[in-house]
Amino acid sequence: MHMRYQCSNPWNNAAYWRRIRQDPTFKERDKAGRRARYYRSRKTERQVQAFLRAQQDQRFEEHEGEFGGGL
Image (cartoon, rainbow, N blue to C red; front, side):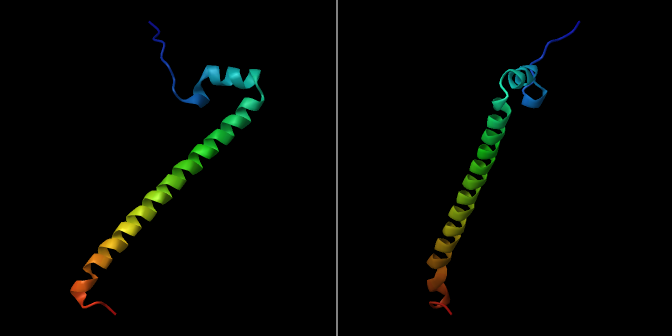
């Protein structure tokens, strides 16, 4: 008995390729969307890193007094 299953991978999805054949600009738009999503995720990653760095700096400033006001 053959089980039908949904494939969530768009590159392996018949509907995706059918849509590409019907609409030649779809592939380019999808590629652009992927690139935008990638860079957006990278940007938020950088923001998180910056936030953590700022927190560490703050923590360091809080403890500065213990070491006699510093070098």
